[in-house]
Image (cartoon, rainbow, N blue to C red; front, side, top):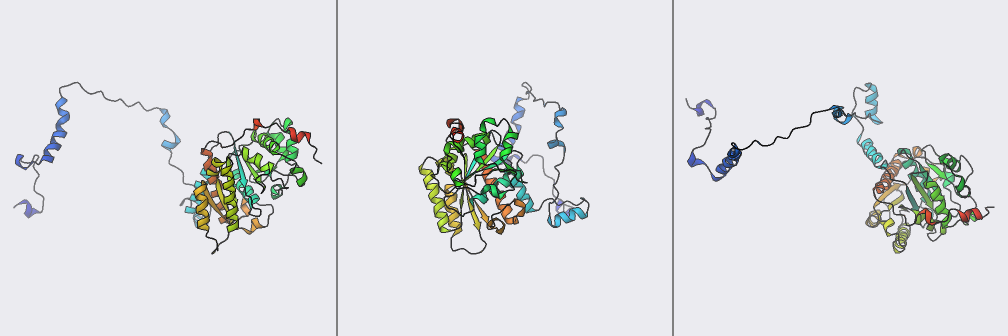
Length: 379
């Protein structure tokens, strides 16, 4: 009986006949045998592995990663129904939100100053400042403050529950007495998100009297106690207030409406900034395309977004939300889920810029400390 009859393979010889060796086979045999040529020489040095120590017992090495419980939906219901024995983990949407929060929590060296600008009124610049501040403050462990830098009696202070009647002019008058955070806190109002707001005076005659040195001094006073400072600005880019804020800014958020006119004005704003020494701010800016309504638009928003994506670091679309249109006291919890997600994306895009060095053109030390404000009477 042959091997073929049994269905078994014929035995393979340990070495093929010499006349059947190909060049490739011969080469492989030669390479495999090469180490034996030094068999009579000195033994190669063996690399000794270090002995294990107690340092090996870290959470990263020894503990299995915990699966977070689902935050909502049917996954959450199943998790609760089974007393946690069935844990499918976060949904894809929850996992995406967690990744955004991780970006928002990027550490900062020192402090960052973010100017929110638009030369067109009615585009939601103050709402963007407020909700961006809420998103940053709610998910970071450091201090976040928003300063109303609108010289025309801005409304930022009216978008949170006021804890006091103090304004930026009161802060300026007291800068020499601000020994610590608790002293500064008397001039701010804090929202549930932990965002603090320094309000503008309701009398435009008072705020119009402030110059660029005053706003630089206010920023310097806040900078000593807060890691993140957002500045809401007016529509006049040549106003002394806006000029002072731009000179102190590290990053820029440009707000535009989803209209041809709104996009054109925002693009012209970038043109002006590019031409007047702020090209680095423009390149690192985030464009917020605000109040985008669902459905077809006569404006090609993809073209609009593409224009700003070519000029700025990121573009984020924020959907229309009736809660924001009302213009009252607003926090993240009151917004539609799609709007909350958009502000998480906006905050994450801003926080991505924390990896870059600060871009401020001036330092607070280059401005006289509040002298113009102290010498002026605010009646």
